[in-house]
Length: 380
Figure 1 (cartoon, rainbow, N blue to C red):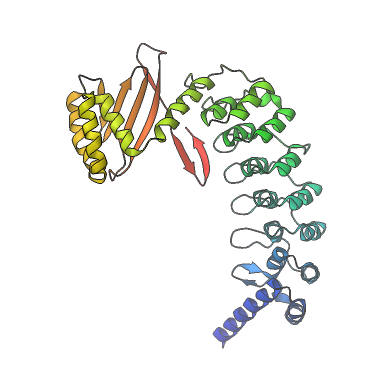
Figure 2: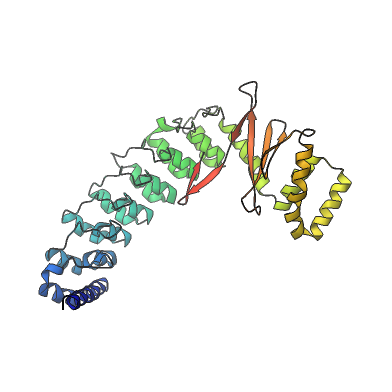
Protein backbone atom coordinates (compact mmCIF):
# COMPACT_ATOMS: atom_id res chain seq x y z
CA UNK A 1 0.00 0.00 0.00
CA UNK A 2 2.88 2.40 0.83
CA UNK A 3 4.56 1.68 -2.53
CA UNK A 4 1.31 2.28 -4.39
CA UNK A 5 0.84 5.56 -2.52
CA UNK A 6 4.35 6.75 -3.47
CA UNK A 7 3.83 5.80 -7.12
CA UNK A 8 0.49 7.62 -7.15
CA UNK A 9 2.08 10.71 -5.60
CA UNK A 10 4.92 10.70 -8.15
CA UNK A 11 2.49 10.35 -11.04
CA UNK A 12 0.37 13.18 -9.68
CA UNK A 13 3.40 15.48 -9.33
CA UNK A 14 4.59 14.68 -12.85
CA UNK A 15 1.18 15.62 -14.18
CA UNK A 16 1.01 18.75 -11.99
CA UNK A 17 4.37 20.09 -13.22
CA UNK A 18 3.40 19.40 -16.85
CA UNK A 19 0.16 21.33 -16.34
CA UNK A 20 2.10 24.20 -14.78
CA UNK A 21 4.49 24.30 -17.74
CA UNK A 22 1.49 24.61 -20.05
CA UNK A 23 -0.03 27.38 -17.95
CA UNK A 24 -3.20 25.51 -16.93
CA UNK A 25 -4.06 27.61 -13.89
CA UNK A 26 -7.37 25.90 -13.06
CA UNK A 27 -5.82 22.42 -12.89
CA UNK A 28 -2.91 23.58 -10.75
CA UNK A 29 -5.17 25.61 -8.46
CA UNK A 30 -7.50 22.66 -7.87
CA UNK A 31 -4.58 20.35 -6.99
CA UNK A 32 -2.79 22.84 -4.72
CA UNK A 33 -5.94 23.77 -2.84
CA UNK A 34 -6.57 20.07 -2.27
CA UNK A 35 -2.96 19.25 -1.34
CA UNK A 36 -1.40 22.53 -0.08
CA UNK A 37 1.68 20.74 1.29
CA UNK A 38 2.65 19.67 -2.23
CA UNK A 39 2.95 23.16 -3.71
CA UNK A 40 6.74 22.66 -3.91
CA UNK A 41 6.48 19.10 -5.21
CA UNK A 42 9.03 18.17 -7.87
CA UNK A 43 9.09 16.34 -11.16
CA UNK A 44 12.50 15.80 -12.72
CA UNK A 45 13.93 18.06 -10.04
CA UNK A 46 11.73 21.01 -11.08
CA UNK A 47 8.89 22.68 -9.22
CA UNK A 48 5.70 24.18 -10.61
CA UNK A 49 6.96 27.67 -9.81
CA UNK A 50 10.20 27.15 -11.71
CA UNK A 51 8.58 25.90 -14.92
CA UNK A 52 5.86 28.58 -14.72
CA UNK A 53 8.56 31.25 -14.38
CA UNK A 54 10.45 29.88 -17.36
CA UNK A 55 7.34 29.89 -19.54
CA UNK A 56 6.16 33.30 -18.38
CA UNK A 57 2.75 32.33 -16.96
CA UNK A 58 2.16 35.47 -14.88
CA UNK A 59 -1.17 34.56 -13.25
CA UNK A 60 0.03 31.08 -12.37
CA UNK A 61 3.22 32.44 -10.80
CA UNK A 62 1.19 34.90 -8.72
CA UNK A 63 -1.12 32.12 -7.53
CA UNK A 64 1.76 29.79 -6.60
CA UNK A 65 3.45 32.55 -4.61
CA UNK A 66 0.21 33.30 -2.79
CA UNK A 67 -0.08 29.58 -2.01
CA UNK A 68 3.34 29.62 -0.33
CA UNK A 69 5.65 28.31 -3.09
CA UNK A 70 9.31 28.68 -2.16
CA UNK A 71 11.22 31.45 -3.93
CA UNK A 72 14.59 29.96 -3.04
CA UNK A 73 13.90 26.34 -3.93
CA UNK A 74 16.61 25.11 -6.32
CA UNK A 75 16.73 22.32 -8.87
CA UNK A 76 19.50 19.73 -9.21
CA UNK A 77 21.77 22.35 -10.82
CA UNK A 78 21.11 24.89 -8.11
CA UNK A 79 18.91 27.11 -10.28
CA UNK A 80 16.15 29.02 -8.50
CA UNK A 81 12.91 30.43 -9.91
CA UNK A 82 14.78 33.66 -10.67
CA UNK A 83 17.33 31.75 -12.73
CA UNK A 84 14.47 30.10 -14.62
CA UNK A 85 12.93 33.48 -15.45
CA UNK A 86 16.35 34.60 -16.76
CA UNK A 87 16.68 31.46 -18.88
CA UNK A 88 13.20 32.01 -20.30
CA UNK A 89 13.68 35.75 -20.98
CA UNK A 90 10.82 36.74 -18.67
CA UNK A 91 11.55 40.22 -17.24
CA UNK A 92 7.94 40.64 -16.04
CA UNK A 93 8.21 37.44 -14.00
CA UNK A 94 11.54 38.66 -12.64
CA UNK A 95 9.90 41.82 -11.37
CA UNK A 96 7.19 39.80 -9.60
CA UNK A 97 9.78 37.56 -7.91
CA UNK A 98 12.02 40.44 -6.88
CA UNK A 99 9.11 42.37 -5.41
CA UNK A 100 8.48 39.24 -3.32
CA UNK A 101 12.08 39.56 -2.03
CA UNK A 102 13.64 36.78 -4.07
CA UNK A 103 17.40 36.59 -3.55
CA UNK A 104 18.65 38.54 -6.56
CA UNK A 105 22.26 37.36 -6.11
CA UNK A 106 21.58 33.65 -5.57
CA UNK A 107 24.09 31.47 -7.44
CA UNK A 108 23.73 27.97 -8.82
CA UNK A 109 26.27 25.15 -8.64
CA UNK A 110 28.31 26.80 -11.38
CA UNK A 111 28.44 29.97 -9.24
CA UNK A 112 26.30 31.76 -11.84
CA UNK A 113 23.79 34.37 -10.74
CA UNK A 114 20.63 35.25 -12.66
CA UNK A 115 22.64 38.13 -14.18
CA UNK A 116 25.21 35.67 -15.58
CA UNK A 117 22.37 33.68 -17.14
CA UNK A 118 20.69 36.74 -18.66
CA UNK A 119 23.99 38.02 -20.08
CA UNK A 120 24.98 34.67 -21.58
CA UNK A 121 21.53 34.28 -23.14
CA UNK A 122 21.75 37.93 -24.29
CA UNK A 123 18.38 38.76 -22.77
CA UNK A 124 18.77 42.53 -22.58
CA UNK A 125 15.44 43.29 -20.87
CA UNK A 126 16.24 40.79 -18.11
CA UNK A 127 19.61 42.46 -17.57
CA UNK A 128 17.89 45.84 -17.32
CA UNK A 129 15.43 44.47 -14.74
CA UNK A 130 18.19 42.97 -12.60
CA UNK A 131 20.20 46.18 -12.70
CA UNK A 132 17.07 48.12 -11.74
CA UNK A 133 16.85 46.05 -8.55
CA UNK A 134 20.58 46.61 -7.81
CA UNK A 135 22.01 43.16 -8.43
CA UNK A 136 25.70 42.58 -7.70
CA UNK A 137 27.52 42.90 -11.04
CA UNK A 138 30.83 41.73 -9.54
CA UNK A 139 29.84 38.14 -8.72
CA UNK A 140 32.34 35.70 -10.25
CA UNK A 141 31.30 32.29 -11.53
CA UNK A 142 33.25 29.04 -11.16
CA UNK A 143 35.68 30.22 -13.87
CA UNK A 144 36.13 33.56 -12.13
CA UNK A 145 34.24 35.40 -14.88
CA UNK A 146 32.00 38.33 -14.05
CA UNK A 147 28.92 39.21 -16.06
CA UNK A 148 31.04 41.77 -17.94
CA UNK A 149 33.54 39.08 -18.94
CA UNK A 150 30.63 37.08 -20.36
CA UNK A 151 29.12 40.06 -22.17
CA UNK A 152 32.47 40.78 -23.84
CA UNK A 153 32.77 37.15 -24.93
CA UNK A 154 29.25 37.27 -26.39
CA UNK A 155 29.98 40.60 -28.14
CA UNK A 156 26.69 41.96 -26.82
CA UNK A 157 27.07 45.70 -27.42
CA UNK A 158 23.99 46.86 -25.51
CA UNK A 159 24.73 44.71 -22.47
CA UNK A 160 28.39 45.78 -22.41
CA UNK A 161 27.25 49.39 -22.42
CA UNK A 162 24.79 48.75 -19.59
CA UNK A 163 27.32 46.97 -17.38
CA UNK A 164 30.09 49.52 -17.97
CA UNK A 165 27.77 52.26 -16.73
CA UNK A 166 26.97 50.54 -13.42
CA UNK A 167 28.53 52.73 -10.67
CA UNK A 168 29.87 49.84 -8.59
CA UNK A 169 31.39 47.68 -11.33
CA UNK A 170 34.95 46.50 -10.58
CA UNK A 171 36.99 46.47 -13.80
CA UNK A 172 40.06 45.04 -12.06
CA UNK A 173 38.58 41.63 -11.21
CA UNK A 174 40.47 38.75 -12.83
CA UNK A 175 39.13 35.34 -13.75
CA UNK A 176 40.96 32.12 -12.93
CA UNK A 177 43.12 32.48 -16.04
CA UNK A 178 44.29 35.89 -14.89
CA UNK A 179 42.30 38.00 -17.37
CA UNK A 180 40.69 41.24 -16.30
CA UNK A 181 37.94 42.60 -18.55
CA UNK A 182 40.34 44.62 -20.74
CA UNK A 183 42.56 41.56 -21.22
CA UNK A 184 39.43 39.61 -22.15
CA UNK A 185 38.33 42.24 -24.67
CA UNK A 186 41.78 42.20 -26.29
CA UNK A 187 41.82 38.40 -26.38
CA UNK A 188 38.39 38.23 -28.03
CA UNK A 189 39.05 41.11 -30.44
CA UNK A 190 36.11 43.10 -29.07
CA UNK A 191 36.95 46.67 -30.10
CA UNK A 192 33.69 48.18 -28.84
CA UNK A 193 34.33 46.80 -25.36
CA UNK A 194 37.93 48.01 -25.51
CA UNK A 195 36.81 51.54 -26.32
CA UNK A 196 34.20 51.57 -23.56
CA UNK A 197 36.61 50.15 -20.98
CA UNK A 198 39.35 52.63 -21.82
CA UNK A 199 36.79 55.40 -21.52
CA UNK A 200 36.00 54.29 -17.96
CA UNK A 201 39.34 52.96 -16.71
CA UNK A 202 42.31 53.86 -18.92
CA UNK A 203 44.73 52.96 -16.12
CA UNK A 204 44.22 49.27 -16.97
CA UNK A 205 45.85 49.61 -20.38
CA UNK A 206 49.33 48.42 -19.33
CA UNK A 207 48.28 46.13 -16.47
CA UNK A 208 49.88 42.71 -16.93
CA UNK A 209 48.69 39.19 -16.26
CA UNK A 210 50.87 36.90 -14.15
CA UNK A 211 52.77 35.89 -17.31
CA UNK A 212 53.48 39.53 -18.14
CA UNK A 213 50.97 39.76 -21.00
CA UNK A 214 49.19 43.12 -21.19
CA UNK A 215 46.16 43.86 -23.38
CA UNK A 216 48.35 44.95 -26.30
CA UNK A 217 50.31 41.66 -26.22
CA UNK A 218 47.05 39.70 -26.41
CA UNK A 219 45.67 41.79 -29.26
CA UNK A 220 48.86 41.43 -31.32
CA UNK A 221 49.23 37.72 -30.63
CA UNK A 222 45.69 37.10 -31.89
CA UNK A 223 45.84 39.42 -34.88
CA UNK A 224 43.24 41.92 -33.62
CA UNK A 225 44.45 45.04 -35.43
CA UNK A 226 41.52 47.32 -34.53
CA UNK A 227 41.91 46.55 -30.83
CA UNK A 228 45.66 47.17 -31.01
CA UNK A 229 45.08 50.53 -32.69
CA UNK A 230 42.54 51.51 -30.02
CA UNK A 231 44.91 50.51 -27.21
CA UNK A 232 47.69 52.60 -28.74
CA UNK A 233 45.65 55.65 -29.80
CA UNK A 234 42.95 55.93 -27.13
CA UNK A 235 44.68 54.02 -24.34
CA UNK A 236 48.21 55.30 -25.03
CA UNK A 237 49.57 51.82 -24.32
CA UNK A 238 53.31 51.41 -24.00
CA UNK A 239 54.30 50.04 -27.40
CA UNK A 240 57.51 48.32 -26.26
CA UNK A 241 56.12 46.75 -23.09
CA UNK A 242 57.68 43.32 -22.51
CA UNK A 243 56.14 40.22 -20.96
CA UNK A 244 57.95 37.81 -18.64
CA UNK A 245 59.68 36.25 -21.65
CA UNK A 246 60.96 39.64 -22.83
CA UNK A 247 58.58 39.61 -25.80
CA UNK A 248 57.21 42.86 -27.17
CA UNK A 249 53.80 43.13 -28.88
CA UNK A 250 55.61 43.56 -32.21
CA UNK A 251 57.52 40.31 -31.75
CA UNK A 252 54.28 38.44 -31.00
CA UNK A 253 52.57 39.94 -34.05
CA UNK A 254 55.43 38.89 -36.33
CA UNK A 255 55.63 35.38 -34.89
CA UNK A 256 51.89 34.93 -35.34
CA UNK A 257 52.21 35.85 -39.03
CA UNK A 258 54.74 33.04 -39.50
CA UNK A 259 52.53 30.60 -37.62
CA UNK A 260 49.42 31.52 -39.63
CA UNK A 261 51.32 31.19 -42.88
CA UNK A 262 52.59 27.76 -41.90
CA UNK A 263 49.21 26.50 -40.76
CA UNK A 264 47.66 27.57 -44.06
CA UNK A 265 49.85 25.04 -45.88
CA UNK A 266 48.57 21.55 -46.51
CA UNK A 267 50.11 18.59 -44.70
CA UNK A 268 51.91 17.53 -47.88
CA UNK A 269 53.31 21.04 -48.43
CA UNK A 270 54.50 21.20 -44.82
CA UNK A 271 56.33 17.89 -45.11
CA UNK A 272 57.89 18.86 -48.45
CA UNK A 273 59.13 22.12 -46.99
CA UNK A 274 60.59 20.31 -43.99
CA UNK A 275 62.33 17.81 -46.25
CA UNK A 276 63.68 20.55 -48.53
CA UNK A 277 64.94 22.73 -45.68
CA UNK A 278 66.64 19.93 -43.80
CA UNK A 279 67.99 17.46 -46.32
CA UNK A 280 68.79 20.14 -48.97
CA UNK A 281 68.26 17.76 -51.85
CA UNK A 282 68.81 18.77 -55.46
CA UNK A 283 65.85 20.76 -56.91
CA UNK A 284 65.38 18.27 -59.78
CA UNK A 285 65.23 15.34 -57.40
CA UNK A 286 62.89 17.33 -55.17
CA UNK A 287 60.58 17.94 -58.16
CA UNK A 288 60.61 14.24 -58.97
CA UNK A 289 59.57 13.39 -55.41
CA UNK A 290 56.80 15.99 -55.64
CA UNK A 291 55.49 14.43 -58.86
CA UNK A 292 55.51 10.97 -57.32
CA UNK A 293 53.76 12.29 -54.24
CA UNK A 294 50.91 13.69 -56.33
CA UNK A 295 50.49 10.30 -58.00
CA UNK A 296 50.66 8.38 -54.74
CA UNK A 297 49.62 11.00 -52.21
CA UNK A 298 47.85 8.65 -49.81
CA UNK A 299 50.80 6.28 -49.63
CA UNK A 300 53.17 9.21 -49.47
CA UNK A 301 51.66 10.86 -46.43
CA UNK A 302 52.07 7.67 -44.45
CA UNK A 303 55.46 6.66 -45.82
CA UNK A 304 57.24 10.00 -45.80
CA UNK A 305 57.78 10.05 -42.06
CA UNK A 306 59.05 6.48 -42.14
CA UNK A 307 61.64 7.50 -44.75
CA UNK A 308 62.39 11.01 -43.53
CA UNK A 309 63.03 10.51 -39.84
CA UNK A 310 66.00 8.11 -40.23
CA UNK A 311 67.48 10.48 -42.83
CA UNK A 312 67.06 13.44 -40.50
CA UNK A 313 68.68 11.54 -37.66
CA UNK A 314 71.64 10.69 -39.89
CA UNK A 315 72.07 14.27 -41.12
CA UNK A 316 71.38 16.10 -37.85
CA UNK A 317 75.09 16.84 -37.30
CA UNK A 318 75.60 18.22 -40.81
CA UNK A 319 72.51 20.39 -41.09
CA UNK A 320 71.96 21.64 -37.50
CA UNK A 321 69.05 19.31 -36.78
CA UNK A 322 68.14 18.14 -33.33
CA UNK A 323 65.94 15.16 -32.70
CA UNK A 324 64.09 16.23 -29.56
CA UNK A 325 62.19 13.00 -28.99
CA UNK A 326 60.64 10.12 -30.88
CA UNK A 327 58.62 11.56 -33.75
CA UNK A 328 59.64 15.12 -32.91
CA UNK A 329 61.98 17.20 -35.08
CA UNK A 330 63.25 20.74 -34.60
CA UNK A 331 64.85 22.72 -37.43
CA UNK A 332 67.05 25.74 -36.68
CA UNK A 333 66.64 28.49 -39.33
CA UNK A 334 68.71 31.48 -38.27
CA UNK A 335 67.03 32.93 -35.16
CA UNK A 336 63.86 30.88 -35.52
CA UNK A 337 62.90 27.30 -34.82
CA UNK A 338 60.24 25.12 -36.37
CA UNK A 339 59.26 22.07 -34.33
CA UNK A 340 57.24 19.21 -35.78
CA UNK A 341 55.61 16.64 -33.55
CA UNK A 342 53.44 13.65 -34.39
CA UNK A 343 50.52 12.78 -32.19
CA UNK A 344 50.26 9.43 -30.46
CA UNK A 345 48.81 7.69 -33.53
CA UNK A 346 51.24 9.26 -35.96
CA UNK A 347 48.34 10.46 -38.12
CA UNK A 348 48.59 14.14 -37.26
CA UNK A 349 51.58 16.47 -37.24
CA UNK A 350 51.60 19.56 -35.07
CA UNK A 351 53.91 22.47 -35.73
CA UNK A 352 55.11 24.87 -33.04
CA UNK A 353 56.97 28.08 -33.85
CA UNK A 354 59.79 29.23 -31.60
CA UNK A 355 61.32 32.68 -31.71
CA UNK A 356 64.91 32.73 -30.49
CA UNK A 357 66.06 35.68 -28.41
CA UNK A 358 69.53 36.41 -27.12
CA UNK A 359 69.23 37.47 -23.49
CA UNK A 360 72.08 35.16 -22.48
CA UNK A 361 75.05 33.63 -24.33
CA UNK A 362 72.83 30.63 -24.98
CA UNK A 363 69.70 30.83 -27.08
CA UNK A 364 66.45 30.79 -25.18
CA UNK A 365 63.41 29.26 -26.86
CA UNK A 366 60.02 30.87 -26.37
CA UNK A 367 57.16 28.46 -26.84
CA UNK A 368 53.82 29.78 -28.05
CA UNK A 369 50.95 27.31 -27.89
CA UNK A 370 47.17 27.51 -27.90
CA UNK A 371 44.79 25.57 -25.75
CA UNK A 372 40.92 25.41 -25.43
CA UNK A 373 39.10 24.83 -22.19
CA UNK A 374 35.20 24.69 -22.12
CA UNK A 375 35.12 26.78 -25.34
CA UNK A 376 37.29 29.51 -23.73
CA UNK A 377 40.69 30.30 -25.28
CA UNK A 378 43.72 30.29 -23.03
CA UNK A 379 47.26 31.21 -23.95
CA UNK A 380 50.35 30.03 -22.15
